[in-house]
Each structure stands twice: as structure tokens, then as C-alpha cells.
Image (tube, rainbow, N blue to C red; front, side, top):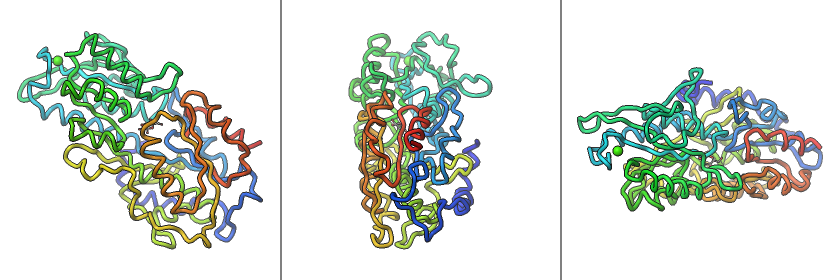
Length: 420
Ligand code: BGC
Ligand code: CA
């Protein structure tokens, strides 16, 4: 789908949601007792049910029942923002950016998970902006290059940039999927190990560091880039990265955890109340909660509510120092008589993920209070889906579910558990 076109018409798309109201009627709110597990509301979040090889959406998972949605981020728009931020920075520097003076601006890239569509989009966005992208079947290849010191890789190509009146080559010197020895992806420690190795091999060729997320980026910043004045670009706007901007961390992208965490729980609330799914989202609820139309949109076919990203750099970081602050316009607590307490089971795929544990989870907890939801949060180990499913216990004890799979192909495992 073409996200680029969609972002200019959020009003219209958000409006469309009204037609796909949460299945039951307003007078018929869902209660755990009389609803079978397979009919309970489910929100997949942060990891879109999709084929990890082809990126194809898993439509069975998002149409599992009438009260199923995906909440995530507009990955293309965010990737473009990160790419533009990087190239703007490079072009705005002077000859000192080329640390070893060889006429090449070399960057290294930390990849989160080559099988996760969000990670692939960010790799593509960075390569596109730097002019290093290579296409296959008209799509930019998002794979890791390993080491490409001599520029001979077939996965990327050399780009060019004019900096202070002089032409330079831009080269992806190295890139790697940051996986722990256990197999956990988006792994910050793996990025720490990788930067140490890269520095040993070709330290003064590294002029810029790009990361698919902040957790990995900050590790590379702390281990080496900070003390060597090498710019690092991350993604997520976690509090610790935004705080590090004053110390030279170059920039990040906010994927609006404040919007996404709200959407994740709000959709479940609406489905449990049997009201229009857009309540308190695109249209005000009974206490005035409503999101700004400029901050998200709804993609009908994918049943996806997607937050729109914001660039965070030294120009505006002071306004983003507290990414756990709830979105003010949706912070009014619902009346507990009209919106009685419900039980939601929610999981986070890994204990090690800074974005989900540092930024997203505290927001979920705050919105759970606002929305009268009792949240049971379980956390997986990041590499074995059963580390999560073994903690589901008896699904009949919950009214609704919010799922953050380890692998985006694994939705069926959860659907099976709910179908038993
Ligand atoms: C975040 C990453 C996170 C990943 C997990 C992405 O949206 O940017 O930081 O590790 O989701 O699924
Ligand atoms: Ca150089």
C-alpha cells in the first residue's frame, strides 16, 4: 500500500473507521462470562502479523474475529524522516566529517531484525537517503551487508554527497542484524559488541553511525561514538537517547508511543463497551478524550491504526525529554459505572527492548488507569514464543488481549490458543 498518499488524508480515513464499529451493538457490551475466547477483542501491536520473508500482511490474523486490529506506526513515513535527518546532517557538515580524509563518508548500520517489516523499512529509508540503496524487483534490498570496506557489496552501492563544496562518496562500510547469542533481535548488547569489532577493524573510517532503534544506537554511542565525536542516529526517542542529544547523540525519531499505547488499550475498551471503535480516538468520548487527527490514521484494509512519527533533533529535543508523558487530550479518566473494569492480558516480546519497556509500558500502565482496565503484563525472552504463551494461563480469565509477538509470522500460535 502507499502510505505516502494516505498520510495527507487522515481525516477522511479516520472518518472511515466509524463504518467498522466494534462488532457488538452499543447496548450489548462484552463480558468475559458469556463470550468465547475466540470472539474476544485482540489488538496486535508493534509487530504486525506478517510474513517475515515477504512482508505480506497476515490477513487471517487481523480478521480473526470482528474485534481485531493492529496498532503500530507508519513505518514508511518514519523511515523517510530518519533518512532525511541523516542526509541533512551530512550535507550540513564540513570536511571534518571525513575523519580519515579519504574522501569517503563511511557509515555503519545496526539492523534490528531483518524479518520485521519495521526494521526493513528503516534500513531502506537510510539507504535511500544516503544514495546507497540497491533495488531488486523494484524494491530496496534491506539485507545486511556484513563488511563492505572496499565498496564491492552487491546489496548496497556507493552514494555521493557534496559537503562544503567538495564531492564525497557515501559508503555503507558495514551492517549487521543485532541478534543476541540466544537469538533475540534488536539486541543492544549485540550492537555494543559489533561496534567494538568494527572499530578494531576500521575505526577511523567510521564517520556516521545509523541504528534501526535507540537501544542499539545508545549502546554504540556509549561504547565508542561519544568519546570519538562520531554522530549517531537512532529511532524511538527513548528518554535516555533524547537526554543524550545534549551530549552529542545526533537525533532520533519519535514513533509516538503516547499515541500508540493509548490506541492499543482504547480499541480494546471500545470493543468491550460495544461502541464505535473510533470513540475517544477520532471522535470525542463522553469525557472529551480525542486524539488529534494529525497524529494517526486508520488503514482500513489492514485494520491498522498507525501513529505518525516526528523527528527529534537538537532543534526540538527539549520538548521531547519525557516520552512517557501521556497524551494530554486523552488523559481524562472514564466513569467506572459507565465503563466498568475489565481484564486485559498484554504481553511484551522481550525483557531487553528499551523502547517497549522504557517508553511504551509505562504509558500503557497510565492509560490502563484512565480506561478502567486491569492489565496483566507478561514479558517474553525475545527469542522463544513459548516464553510468552506459557504465561497466558487460562484465556477465559481475561476480557481482551493485546499481543506483541516475537516473530511476526507467529500469530497463528496465539489464535490457536484463543480457539481452544
Ligand atoms: C522499535 C524498536 C523495537 C521494535 C520491537 C520498533 O518499533 O522501534 O525499538 O525494538 O519495535 O518490535
Ligand atoms: Ca572517511
